[in-house]
Length: 259
Image (cartoon, rainbow, N blue to C red):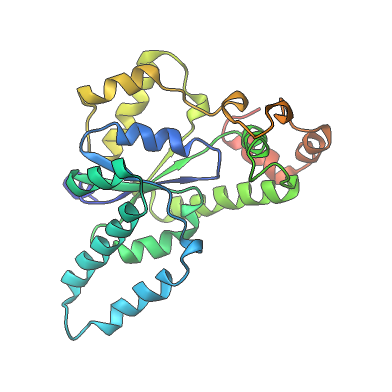
């Protein structure tokens, strides 16, 4: 994919929940010509998958193949921003580039590649240390009763899925580890430049307030339950022991530079 083509491709930010996808979503959205829509979980609208599959055959006699690819992309863009907040809807109508942030979207790559067949998406995968992800999940209302076995399995499945895609299409994947970026402003700018180079854009002045103020990863203190006193400072000992003896998890942590 040449640089000019990248500017027509949608941008999909994905990764395990609580890995820092929101941070990267806001970073990209701080660019005045990039509109990033709110989370859009395919599993909540399962009828969309067969709908887009049916479009490939149902309208063959009415729409030529090239136009069909364009129209599918337009429909998906409309759906992304239709379910976004007011800021997203307004920016989505005028911005030159667009994309979406949804944890777990890496499991729907084949779906999005079909929908955006004319200009296949660029994927930005956010990876964060597993123990910190699990602690952050536990400190949300929806994840406070999560089982460590299930959390670990979903986390590993997410990484394995994106690695498989990386082997097939390395030019369409950018892997970012926000928790490994220092607070040094030069390091922030260097990472941001690499990210924008990947999608075919440049740092612009309007992004600088965000780049100077960012937080590169969630902290436990940023997450609030209805009962603040119940916030965990660290994982329970039994969870730590489980992870310590989980060979596949430990192998992945070493592979990506986590101790």
